[in-house]
Image (cartoon, rainbow, N blue to C red; front, side, top):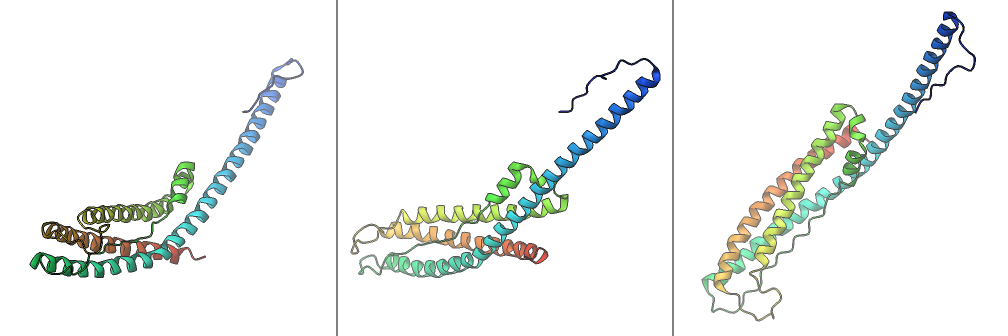
Length: 215
């Protein structure tokens, strides 16, 4: 807050008044300039910190992408085997237990702490529009991947609910449940294909950003 004090000496003429007015004006300009400089330096430091943090976060998430794709690919192969087991149960329910379907998705999460912090601190509002839009585009795609992951996990829960995973090894699988589980696994496989496409799209955005911002 800027304080303006009255003159120490009484004003006796227009000349004195003019000098005093000019002095106040110059003082206000200097004070406002210094205040603006302090705020500018603060905003610049805030943006620099956000940029560094976002770069580290995007770089770390990028390293997890290949693992995520490998996890999706491995689960797709397992689901094919599960469908074979379920079909055997459906075709010949009185035959010995051909095995139990195994659904085990382990997709790593992607961090967004730096992104949420940049939004909360207002750092994005002090960045150039194109830069802020670039970050927004990356994390929007990352959110799409996160939503797809949760949808896939929800399908896993629905499928597992029909399987005697926690029952003794010799527990027979109900053919009717096997038919329902088969349909749910087919839905899960489609969901995983979509997830793989979204992960690849996110990887392209990550790589484009990291290529433009090395180190």
